[in-house]
Image (cartoon, rainbow, N blue to C red; front, side, top):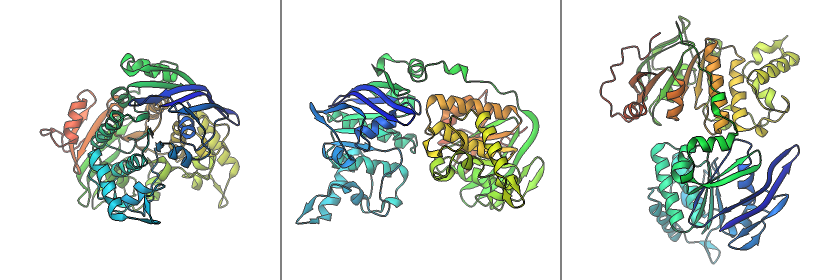
Amino acid sequence: MLRLENISKVYPGVRALDDISIEFQDGEIHGVVGENGAGKSTLVEIVGGTIKPDRGAMELNGSVVAFSEPSEAKAKGIAVVHQHFQSALGLSVTENVLLGSPQLSKGLVNWRDAHKQAEAIFADLGVLIDVRLPMRALKPAQQKFVEIGRAIYGAASVILLDEPTAALDGEDSDRLFAAMRLLSQRGIAVAYVSHRLEEVMTLTDRVSVLRDGHLIGTWPTEELGLDTLITHMVGRELSSFFSDHPEPRPTTVLDVRGATIGDRVHQVDLQVCEGQIVGLAGLLGSGREDLAKAIFGAVRLSEGTIFVDGLQVQLRSPVDAVRAGIAYVPGNRQEEGLVPTMDVGENLTLASLRDLRRHFLVDRAREEETSKSFVERLRIVATSIAQPIETLSGGNQQKVLVARWLATMPRVVILNEPTQGIDVGAKAEIHQLISELAATGLAILILSSDLLELLTMADHILVMHEGRVEASLPRAEATQEKVIEAATGHTAASGASPWATKC
């Protein structure tokens, strides 16, 4: 269906793609994997017409094609579903499906027919969506299906999906996988770009691995094991990244008692000790994120008390939390964390400017010294602290966010989805960093949708369901089955003491 021959793209100082030849067959789900910076996004942008290659050629159905803008690729039947939503939130679902290719009659859209066409697409995908609703009224999973619906409406023969499940939970991901299998059965070539390797192994027919702009190879998925795939991606054994952190110390740092937030969180108790990593599991809407934000002062408690190092703290805002020694690394670094117009150093020191003042002004020399020390300490890969933050890989952007909050000298660090949207190598580095932070005595609370991450990193896992702690599991007792049962409310009495965790 689509063939790329000797595609290369060079940016100043970076060879993003080097002589890449790869083909996507009709009726195939083709996985494309690699670490951040491997060239996956550049490949997607070239195929989608966003950027031009420096050299090489593309063939679509046997004919040579070249695109100078995305509309030309779309007109030829190539559609891209981006990782970050590309929708007009103020328009209706139907309007978003038609976006860029409305069917006109005498210069007008027949909205009755348009609504019927949109409804037929979603019914075919097995998704129930009110096509007259504005996009902003939809859940993230529904918005993702609308973008897929737009691709189908445009009669795409090749669909590229870039990290399509990044904002989806397990059930919505399963619906998406069913839709992708349906598209492949109809002869559409599906390119699936993802960091979630378990999904790639389950879903795809073949896998291509990129590393540092080179194509390492393409294999039938059934011939690859997960360990082999990872080795192809990173070119090294991941075991070299991991370091066990010592046993937690019997000193309570964070002590939450009877935390209640309206009807969203009910009487939650937890303790996190010095050097302890506590995982907080649960489905979307379980209350875990509300609880974490309340501990950071971003959400008000209806009832309950919070202690840090034995002292009760009043958290009316995140400013109070920072002063009390609590740090929070948000789950969506693009929307809630990074300031894209700032460079690495400016992003890194954003939360600690109060401590870098001299005579009411920021001491630029101290700011630069602080930034450089954390870049070195956290092994952040950047040309300098003046490098624009948006040009860093996802893993290094995440490290900058962690560094920002470490610069405030916290006692408690809350990490919300610390490895979401980053590759397997960067994920291993973040895990190693978390272990190192725990070893220094920090109390760490991790919220993660990656169950394997919690099972391997946490000393203790709390599972929330409908605003309550459904299970309290020490590392030795925690299993995937127990966590899933508790998260879905299908567990027997957890046997947790009034203290969900205790030092």
